[in-house]
Length: 313
Image (cartoon, rainbow, N blue to C red; front, side, top):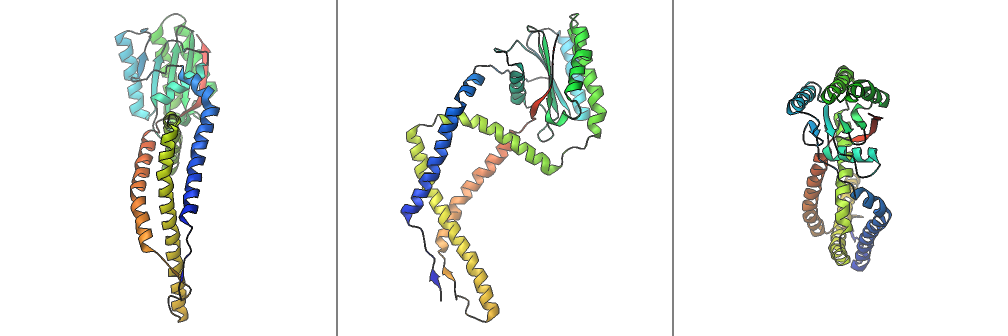
């Protein structure tokens, strides 16, 4: 004979839901407290967008020189899929040059998602410094020692004589010579690895953008969100328990049938309406998760891990 599956009391389930929500907002508040100094420091810098192959914010190049360099980089991109940009920028507000270039590179998303085959040549004329920022996917092709050689042998000789276009062209030629053949010979990541890497990078970027919004949620809105979230958790949890009971009943009934016994022996009563209600709640939630995953993959872009070199000019 069947028996009725025991249920948690609504108060107990609601308490669990409230605890989960309270723990989430507690983590947000704790993270806000721990990360506040770092967020304030990063927020004081202005990170320009790189919208062209050659971004000459200091107006050192003529229009013809800029066009020639852009055409060379565009051809390089078409032939190898490697994406390279040149950024001639004013000096950053503080002294953390590598942090500044990493933030600009992350904002620009130079390089393809999953392969991370981007690089950016930064020039800071006011501080007489050059920095070559290398994407994850090119760090094996252009390690730090070769990045240093590109800047010292390819860029610096002509730059110190104020032949800016020639210096940039020589550096680009060095990069093309080093990476064109080698990158083609390097086995790229598989589809699963590319998807995983893109999702990981995109998640970090989206989380970084969403964090300030979470920090600004007031206490009243936290309570309201937690109230509805707790009831959703209750419904989903009850539906999951009923679904597990249904699967268990099917397994028991199959065993009973093989033994020649009545099918409902040792089974439990299952509330199918609870399962259907949970499915109705989960469908829009699953849709939102899929949409969020697509947004995360779109946000992946090219990733930079700090590889490269900095030299004085």
